[in-house]
Image (cartoon, rainbow, N blue to C red; front, side, top):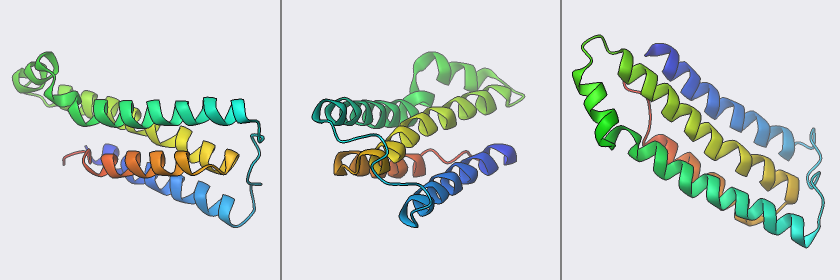
Length: 127
């Protein structure tokens, strides 16, 4: 489980480095363009991935079949497997919003990124 915690903090570090690189103008803001249709499409993508991914990551271990698999496994492999899947779902909820926020300079993606980052705090891998 220690590797999962390292990956979790690595995910936070990667998001922080991405934001820092964009804020320090190493990566140009608005690199995705300023079309209203593009803005709508990416904002919709951010909302769907942030809300859906955050909900799924937080509720994943509560699904009956997964819960039963984790409870009946004596070795702890099932918990590690589902925690890794949960971490990847969190990452897929966070990174599109982070990229779209700096790529479009639209605040919808910022709120989605903050929602997904807050939800990831509820999904810290257990030791």
